Each structure stands twice: as C-alpha cells, then as structure tokens.
Amino acid sequence: MKTKKITLLAMCVALAMILSYVESMIPSPGIPGVKLGLANIVVVFALYKLGWGEAAGVSLLRVFLVSLLFGHAASLMYSAAGAVLSLAGMILLKKTDRLSCVAVSVIGGVLHNAGQILMAWLLMGPNVIYYLPVLVLSGTVAGVAIGVVSALIVRRVDLK
Image 1: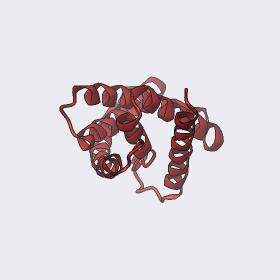
Image 2: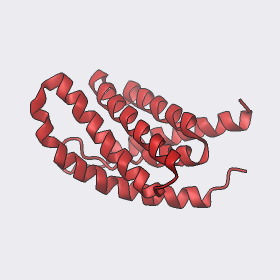
Image 3: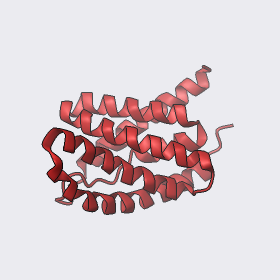
Image 4: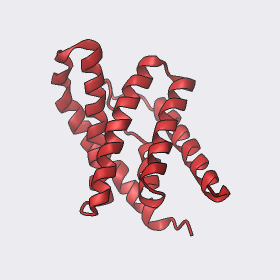
C-alpha cells in the first residue's frame, strides 16, 4: 500500500474518532440510542472515494478504538453490530449504482439501528423489538442529514 493511501486512511480513522467524540459531547435528546452518527460522514466518504474495503476498515477500526478509549464492552458490542450491518447494506447498495449517496446513507443509518436492536435482543430479550420504529425513524432522519453532508464532500473532494 502506498504511503499516500495509508496516510489518507489514518486521517479518515482519526477524523471519524474525533467526530465520534464530538458527538458524545452533544446532549442526548432523551431517547436512548438516538444519535446523529457524525462519524458516518467519513465512512460514506471512504466508501465512495476509496472503496468498500477501506470504508470497512475505517469504520471497524473507529468502532474498536472509540470503544477502547471512551466506552466499554457493551458499547463495543452494540457499535460493532450496528457498524457491520450498516456497512454490509451500504456496500451492497453502493455496488448497484442505482441509489444516491443520501439513499445509501439512509439505509446505513437504519441498518445501524437494526443491528443495535438485534444485539439488544440477544442480550436482553425480544421485548426490545418494540423500540425499533423509533430507531428506524431516527436512523432515517440522521441518514438524510449525514448523506447530504457526505454527498457534498464526495462531490467536492478530489483525491488525485
């Protein structure tokens, strides 16, 4: 791997970590699990500009490092479940080239929340499924916001 690409990937991981930290300082709207997902701006950027493998690496490394530095085992399990499902969906939809960056981001946001609900189901039982509609709505709204910002960045940043 070339030095330029390694440096770019390291900057993406660092920026995603910073955005995760900044988001952790934003007061919660009072609904557990509802977050904007600022770090996903970097993941969507990496998916569109660097490729799916690099995006997966940035996302999973960010999840691991943020959980290690600022979280705990439970946060790692929930974040990893959400990130893996979100990444899988975004990668598959991006490969079709039929949906916009915003639509891919929305699917990523919804799948991230679905992954977290699946993990909660495994850890706490099936009653958590009733919380899914709230998280689908918040994932859609956050996905649109993140997708719009990501699309602007993808359109304006030239890596050549």
